[in-house]
Length: 163
Image (tube, rainbow, N blue to C red; front, side, top):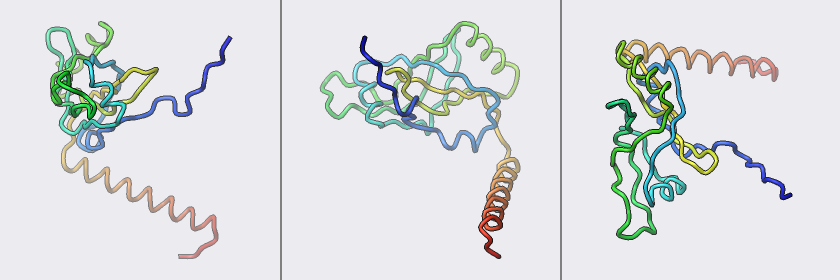
């Protein structure tokens, strides 16, 4: 029996949406598969995609991902895909119903947080987000800088450096 090779990085992240956590308060996350065609998976494996303007919505009981930019595959031919086409996301019915209820209840939206590979398949991490106000963003920035300064001071204290 052949031994399986262990993958050093379990789920290599291909792309992340860094602005999502800045602009939205993430309440819940869910993993979804992406329906891809032809050369899209090859372009993703090259690490060429952007989640900058991407969002997801639920339409007639199905979840769709809009504005995910996957550029054309460099070695592709006339069979290349359209870069910004709408892609279907694969979720269980229970998850779709749960997300539909949460999105419909309040001021919530579905935001793709990251795209990564898992067992040779492309997955997207969707976040259920509530929009932040400007003062919330400022408070988060202030809290992060305070935490950074505290850890810096603790490091100096441990090393015996006086400020």
